[in-house]
Each structure stands twice: as structure tokens, then as C-alpha cells.
Image (tube, rainbow, N blue to C red; front, side, top):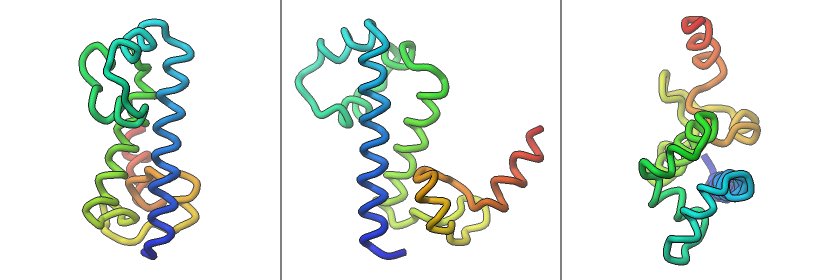
Length: 118
């Protein structure tokens, strides 16, 4: 996959992560207090470094899942595996990654997985 596309996706993932953290700060007094008590850090670093028991208690399960998927996608970028389906190892189409930058699987494998889990 081309380097410029992956760099763009990395920026997009970091923005998504920051938005989640900012929304949590705005919506949750507990989370805001937790963040204010920390050493000054970039919001992205707060999510990456400080998701401990207290933090997880303040997050909704949907936000936890999204943060984990985003962290996973960022790790795949680091190790050169971004854009490859975790199940069949085929390339995930760019259009899918643009829509869901933290997608783990290609559409076929995702559909199959969802059918099996119903």
C-alpha cells in the first residue's frame, strides 16, 4: 500500500482518537478530573499511555472498542501490516479503509464473521 495513503490514514486515526478523548472530557466529569490530574500530555498520549482501570470505568463499551481498534490499526501501521485482512491476509480495499480506517477485515470476511455471530 502506498506510503502517502498510509500516512493519511495514520493522521485520520490519530484525529479519531483525539475526538473520542475530547468527547469523553466534555461528557464525563470523572474523566475530565482524571485527565486534569495527569502531567500535561497530548490527548492521544493520554489514551495510549493511561488507559488503566479508572479510565476504563469512565468509558462506554463502544468507546473502549473504538479506542482499541484504533490502537490496533496504529500498531499495524508500525509493523507494516496495515490494510491486510486479519483473517484471509488479502488487501482491504482503500475505499473500506477510508470509510473505516480501523477495519480489521475485508468486507467478505467481516460479513462472514457477522453471519456466524448472529
